[in-house]
Length: 448
Image (cartoon, rainbow, N blue to C red; front, side, top):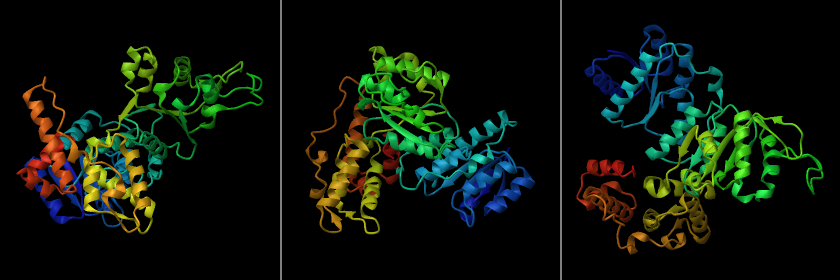
């Protein structure tokens, strides 16, 4: 049995949660505000806390900031309004996990069990650095997603933001790798220092070392003055090496040395220069395959993936398409954004988005320019619907029957959602499923 503190101003929800925890054999403490929760934390010393994000007065993030000074316990954050910003900030402030309402009983029980096991094994662990809690969160609206895959990315950003660990961001072109790198920088103690982005695929091989490490005057023809290089420009901050999979092998060896020794050797210089830089790298390439082919150093591959972050393609998070489209329209339209017609929304949901979020943003810019009124129609978007023309899903006939059936089910769900502009209740009716069955299928196929 454990003592669990619930901090939530919704009396009905708090009561049902307390009843559930009581059925599991736990003792429950209840509070309706941050101050009341902290008083119970100080006087009753609970083993774990479940805290709502939205509270009267100070919010749940304030509880996370103030709790370590009172008592170190695992805190599970709950919110009905999950966003990249509040997920990242909650994890950065030391939340054990971040769950969305309505939360399934099984998910909460499993998360609480992990928290209590952690508490039992790490009773003497040091609390998070309170100084880090004063750092401002990432700007609202930059990372827009409600998908579980992206929520896991947000959580990991929050967990590693306070460290200097090297991060490798993997994902297809256009999935937002630089945006994630910038969010990681803004969420870190280095936020007040430079963020320097380098596209390794756009720099000629013969200029790569000078670009990254700098050079001294006279090092080569045209070197008329000293140059500090991108590592020097990023001193104290973050260096983002985009498309590192395209970096020449000789430069890869020198990058490996920089990561190990934290010093650079400018071209033509006799000595080395220490650097204080966090490195975040990204690529759309399959680096293990590049290692096997001899195009990428194996030792650098292992050194880069201290913390890997994999961004899912847009086609695998269908639920983000319309929120992202509306977000881009708000950015373009300010106080009077244009809106999507049902036909335009269906078209967006039926498109495979090979260019991912970048392609969607470009499509919304184009549609906003081509539409003269307040409503964007399908012909303004300029995409060809694949749902209407595709012959069907590509089935792996050499695979198992279960996998073939799953492919057909996934395709039918995608088409039903596209035909109903994302209306899940109507899609479930067309598929002759209950809404609960459809939700389970969406989770199973990674479309939730």
